[in-house]
Image (cartoon, rainbow, N blue to C red):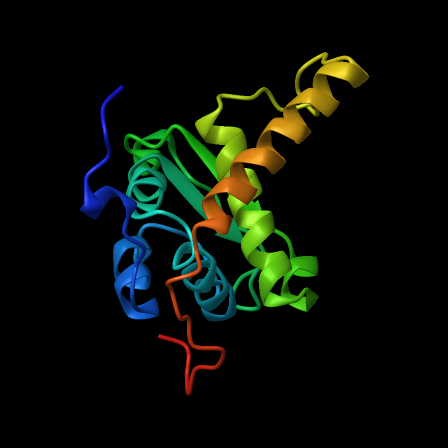
Length: 154
């Protein structure tokens, strides 16, 4: 088994670094940009870079009623994660766990129960696997200090 380098295990040190990585690619309100950046600061760097390369993050916004994306605009993205309004009202820890959990579903190549005919047992297995991987990523967060407040969104 290949040992991961120190760089692969490192976490992001600033919210600005993470926001820069995801900036301009996603359809997120400023509030959700902060939520995403804070969560990603707690997740291993290699996972964050994979997510920035492969996934599109979408949230609701006061800036528009709706939007459309053409296939060309998806570029090489292989999936998306929608961040619900409800997430804004959760604790920072719950926000980070929820985002890590959804990343884990993509990393594990899980099927979406909404569009697949998964049994209750298959759905539970996928949820348990995503929980375990999200917890693993977040457990190694002890050396990271993420600011709890920002003067302004990026």
